[in-house]
Length: 343
Ligand code: UDP
Image (cartoon, rainbow, N blue to C red; front, side):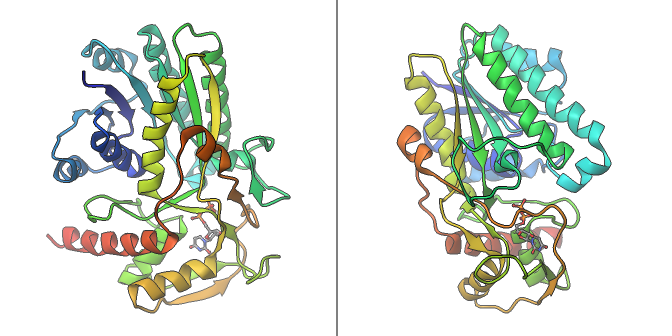
């Protein structure tokens, strides 16, 4: 029997790679996405990679009637992976209501519809942003959640609680909160990848656009941190590895008899500095990047990376790709965007 997995935000960056991973693992992904931050042709690309065209419903996750209609098309739904959310930290500061309304509203709606229909396996897409500023850079899942620095971060903290409290009183649900570190890279086929809207906020898309000449130069946000080369340290994880972790998470949830709500970090377990990312990007792609050192970006955490042992022990999942692979794939993808734009 085909195992149907509803993937909200399935046309987005992490969502599309997860749809591919699910398909590769024999699941039948069903996408709900209103394409507010995704391109319809991503679905063609998913089909090109997997040989299967997923069912796609172009609807807003806050629309309960429409979401319910999607769920009601299928006799049994094996799981729900909820990605659909707005994710620009800066925008969330300027427009908090957009973030509270969409991110929290969407989760409440899909969770309610799923709960009413007895969908068991629930995966929620969270972020290491919930840890806030950390004193010890290696974080386990037991690290306390800190007050958020932005409405975006606050919606992740709140959504985690919503899943936890809903699961606790549900007869059917078992859930996992996946706290992502820094997803980067693209599918090795260069058919899907990240499509930032406007000026990228994140380091690797900014680097790729600078290498292509879309941006004049990259500014490194500070080199006076208390780290070996003075720049911030993050845990960068290949998006394909991250996607596969969702498949492992579903397998884990369905293998558990007891209903639970687990929390798992998804990172490589290694820290890489901004300058190391730049150097690696230059080396693996054999090019020079135009960059300068600038002032610190307000709110940046000095260094943070995952203790990834829980993911390994619980889900049997570890990263297969290195940062270098991700930087190569990010550049391969960036070059195809150029071709698409000039079509
Ligand atoms: N960064 C940078 N220049 C940029 C974008 C990011 O130096 O144009 C740095 C940023 O200060 C941080 C790291 O790159 O230390 C990763 O930033 P990103 O926004 O990608 O992830 P986050 O800070 O949310 O972990």
